[in-house]
Figure 1 (cartoon, rainbow, N blue to C red):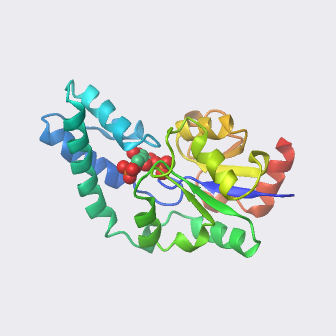
Figure 2: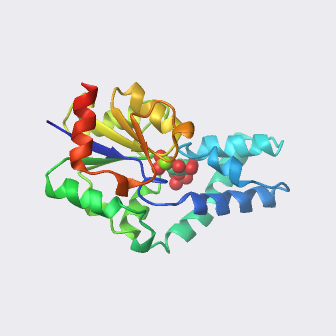
Length: 219
Ligand code: G16
Ligand code: MG
């Protein structure tokens, strides 16, 4: 079977949600309101601009487009400061083993992330060399749940969507993969990821053989 894999970044390969949380909380606090972990959960897979809109809405605050751009840049400067200190110890369980197995088997691998900081994160955590193609917040115009990010990934890997397996931890990402007509492995819990073909706790729970079986079962 022909197979290609497309990985989401935050929450699948590395845990950067904790840094997004700290940076957004600092921004919310500076504006006079608080920001909870539950709210942070709702921002997974959501791009920076849209995340800020949601936060301002939760705080009951209105800002002009120019002010929003400044606030998003401020949050990002704090976030970049934190992720610049990341290391390979922050790669999530099973990521390295699976990526190594896929690379050894010659399976094409792409990144499909909403983040504009994916290059820095992959570099800091030592994962860059596993990817044949990178699609991230710098190269897409429509965010998840739009399928653009994953369709571009398939295109760059020169394969059909029906050959692709997507790994996602966010509901919007699972929706995007399904819209792209790809198989989806959800990372997290089944309640939070409706529609995923299979949901696992982390990447240590899957291997190439299981992925091939999943694709075959789907077709
Ligand atoms: C990630 C995170 C989101 C974040 C987005 C944009 O998406 O899950 O919480 O808002 O990237 O990140 P940045 O501000 O770095 O551009 P993904 O698709 O990698 O899970
Ligand atoms: Mg994610």
